[in-house]
Image (tube, rainbow, N blue to C red):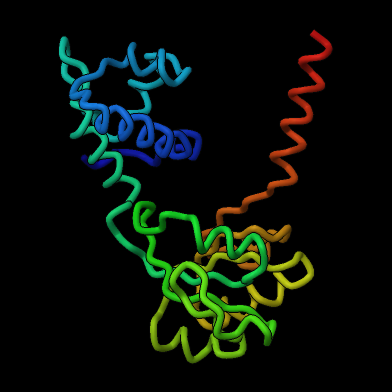
Amino acid sequence: MQNQKPVSMSVIRRLPRYYRFLSELSKSGVTRVSSKELSEKMGFTASQIRQDFNCFGGFGQQGYGYNVPQLCAAIGDILGLDRQYKCILVGAGNLGRAIAGHMPFDQLGFQLIGVFDNAPHLTGQKIGGQEIRPFASIGAFYEEHRPSMAILCVPKESVEAVAGQLYGLGMRSFWNFGHYDIALQYPDTIVENVHMNDSMMTLCYKLAASEKE
């Protein structure tokens, strides 16, 4: 179903959680669920859930609720999980290795087709089913394979240069683990920044706040 107006990022960011919960319900053999039942499982209000789904045309039936497999498939389609966008990973250190080796890319809308690092001793090693290539070869690789997205797992001091080189080749989408805001430098990019430090500081705040209660 097509939405009639732009959907807020707050709604978009809830979609993966809906998808995960509905997938778990479907695997458990649940075929029907109400917004009230979803709210009890997810911590959102039933009204919020209905409003979120209505951004994309609804999906529910009065007196029936939601067909779990159909709703799960519809949200997966909205998220584009069947697209299998080609992606590369730059930075084969501990974080890069963990991501390449353990992320279920094919279930998340992507296909990992290349891993790059500038450390000579890593060239030829394999992670995530991919042989690590020297970053110096990225230009020829990009021209041949045209990946849609780059995962950046490089040190903070290297992110700007790496992002700039990839942008120059034509890359416009990044999953960025470096502490550098690519979108400020290149406003036409699609960037998802992952700041682990910020997440941990937020957790620290919640712990500190709980001690004051």
